[in-house]
Amino acid sequence: MRQEWGRLVALLLSQFRRLDLVEDALGDAVEAASRTWPDDGVPANPAGWLMTAARRRVLDRLRSEDVARRKLPLLLTDAERHQEGVTAMADTGALVEDDVLRLVLMCAHPALAPESASALSLRLVLGVPTADIARLFLVPEPTMAARVTRAKKRIVGAGIPFAVPDASVLPERLDIVAQTAYLAFTAGYSPGTGPDLLRADLSGQAIRLVRVVLGLRPDEPSLVALLALVLLQHSRRDARVHDGRLVLLADQDRTRWHHDEVAEATRLLRSPCLTGPLTPLAASYVVQARIAAEHATAATAADTRWDRVVELYDVLLQVAPSPSARLARAVAVAEHRGAAAGLAALEGLEIPDSHRPAAVRAELLARAGDADAARAAYDQAIAACRNDVERAFLEGQRERL
Amino acid sequence: MRYLVLLIGDGAEKPWSEHTEDEQVVAMAKFGEFDAACRDRAGVELIAGEALSESGDATVMRTVGGRVQLTDGPYAEVIEGMGGFYLLDAPDLDVVVELLQVLPRYDIQIHPTVDVTP
Picture (cartoon, chains in turn orange, purple):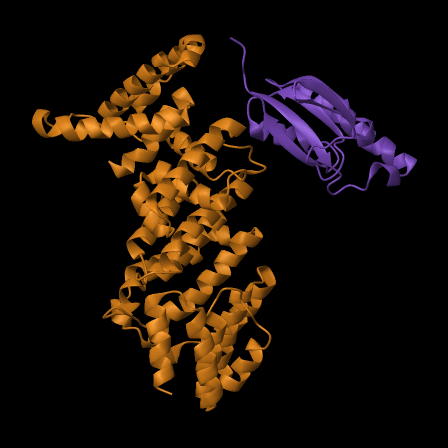
């Protein structure tokens, strides 16, 4: 059912252009199915059944609305014209695929806030329950429900189109799609507060979103590079936590990595579409993925080619300079040329509201043998850390000094 | 959909008074291009559009205690005086944004209107 969700939403939307009614109607149809199918048996064309039920529901609602009295005849003609689309749904017709692309581009429209766009994409394209999206973005469920509702209203109110934009702006728009998918992915891997260390299952939903869009635009560089990047990060999920504790990259059991995903990612990184001119976003995904691939393909932590990792970070800092890239480069420099070089690379680096620069500084000071300064840096990191598991890790490191 | 387009600030452009005469001619030509682009675009109708005089010329009208009170000067919350407006019919936001890119690079607010015809 989940696989069909986005296609059904897209198809209904292409008929009715009423985002507010479409999703509720589909929800009602799914609910009706869960009641009747166990008794009556699953229909031959489940998607078609749901589609018909949802369409009836939308028409009922439209009839009961004042505004519908004026526009109903128009909508009905529209609906009839789209009947062909429904029969085509059983096979994966081009029409349907195009509808899904429209849905994706509408959800990630630049006039929507990125967080709303991410949440809306997961909800409408993949049918992820609002409660799960709330968990992913660490907000209470009613807050997320309100955010999704607001985004839907804004689409209708601002006149955001349900359309595939002109070829001249399509790569830009697909970059935004990639960004919103990545935002959803990283939400699962960078827990800010609370007891969860990671929510890998939910990051997996974001990967599914990338796969859906990539299926529609197979040679889009930003999507190809992003899929490689997220697969590499995701492939380590089972090795990142042990007995409820964070396990650093160097200490991870590499046999627990998903090597099929690593292989897929390295294959993606060889795609011909990545050799042409790239948008800055696509270029930054490629470089980040290549860095992740250096780690993923090293047989042991000691075999990591830190010289190449440092070089790649130098490229990344040119393509997309950011404090977190500088921090990661400093770590690589320390591995390659020693703690003192790493500390020098950290000089003057601060990331507001983050404990990470202090945590790295503490680790490097400890390696350099300056236990007092290391203790002070750990105190600073522990005070700034808002994740329970990470804080426990930092406290353990401090005690071992 | 009907949109009220408000040219709310100079944005990436110099203030009008700092333009040379030649630059003013170039900028004016862009408004002509915008009119033409709207005319040529299917589903788009430019219903109205005016440049506004200096903000100091505006009058504010309020009803206080049942009596109409007029004061000089605009007290609307705009950072700079509003330069002008358009009212246009267009299929969706993307079409409006595309057409407006013909204009000088002002800061622009695109505000859909509510259809109240019975």
